[in-house]
Length: 136
Image: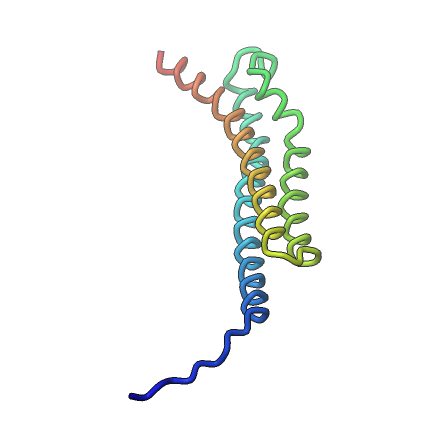
């Protein structure tokens, strides 16, 4: 019976391959979630125009969250950019362990998703009211 000789596993090399692969995956996830949240923020001016034309009383009659987001959507966009790009730069330039890459990725993704969902909710809620009132 013939036995095969296997090369010893180089754990350090495998760890760095895994770290590099996790950095690539984290970059993709952060850029996708940051891009989605950024698109939510970028659509706010169009929503404001719709609300000014469709809501009697203009922006004063909108819910508090909608007025807050419409007044500060550029700050929300800046927060998303800083969170996503800051996490990507940290992952590639300073993170030396796999656990740090995962932690920074999770924090960046959660922050981007939170901002994106808040902006989306703030802009869609008045539209639902407009549609309900329009249908009678």
